[in-house]
Picture 1 (cartoon, one colour):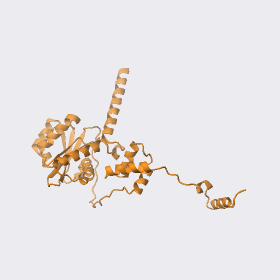
Picture 2 (tube, one colour; picture 1 turned 90 degrees about the horizontal axis):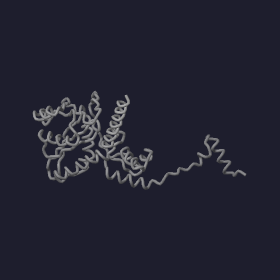
Picture 3 (cartoon, one colour; picture 1 turned 90 degrees about the vertical axis):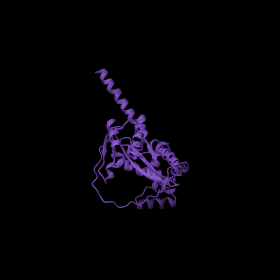
Picture 4 (cartoon, one colour; picture 1 turned 180 degrees about the vertical axis):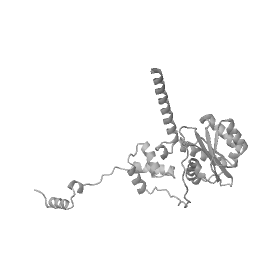
Length: 277
């Protein structure tokens, strides 16, 4: 015998064209406590990482698959970062930069300035590989003349090799006779951007924005030595931990290793073709 409740439920579902199984469905969410705790740990450690970047880290740890779940918990835990309101800028014609196709094809360089609690000035030479998005090095000093710039690049070249081209602005450190002669001796082309157009050096501008937002604005340097330590630690994290959306959420080092593996496989295929041919 069908109960009165069963008949009334069936009639109600028929009136609104709704299946009884749907009407009786009760959401059964998984226990999110472990995921919530891990997300809060990562958000505390990486204070300027938003939901997409935290999701990439959690996905690598195997704790989450669906980005909607990450976004839901991210919102429920109140982890959204505060973003400064951007100033209105005069619109300009965007001309895409020549795309690098291999590591060390083009390095972009610039300077970023900050200060310490004791009043000491901090100047940082920032470098980024346009293809891998990796940062070969960050030179942090109170003053960085052209001689120190070239000495630092020579030092990085021991590990990374020299770039084929360097894209820079028209600052005195880069336009000086010493820098130009140094580049010519090493067969490095200097690509000067047009004065007053920093977006012509978009890769380093983007890097500098992340560097200031995630490192300089998040720390109060006691002195120059403290600044050097914090900045170098951030560079390591940037290369080895921080997912990059432009690299399909890989870190620069993961991207480099993947690229090297691909080249090795292509080399093996070419050797096999040559032998069999």
